[in-house]
Amino acid sequence: MKGAIETMIGILVLTFMAVLGTSYITASLNTQRAQNYHASVVQELENSDFADSVIAEEQAKALENNYNELKIEKKTSDSTGESYAKVTLDYNYSIPILNMVMDHEIVGYAR
Image 1 (cartoon, rainbow, N blue to C red):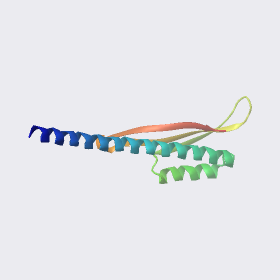
Image 2: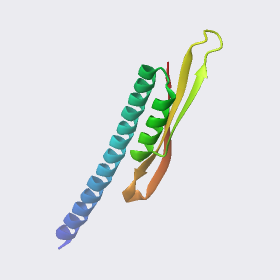
Image 3: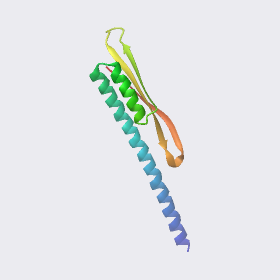
Image 4: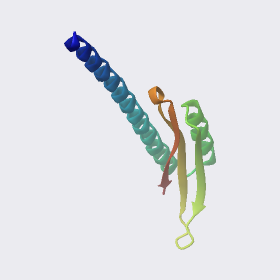
């Protein structure tokens, strides 16, 4: 009888660990998706030479893709006069089984 109870507890612990591990993997995949999206936005901005229409379109797409916010700040270098943009993507990092939702952001520059 003792062996059956220990086996059941072991199975329950293994099941919980498998579900928790799956949640962490899902959160990591969502982070990777956000990083890839951020890189594509930077590439699109560079290809369009920081066009205002592209900036507005990318900000709308970010909201459609369930990201919190996409901030794009156009700037000009003081020394060279070249344009660049600071691109910040704000997204939620969540692990539902632990009821954890954290706000993360990715910051990069388009030149």
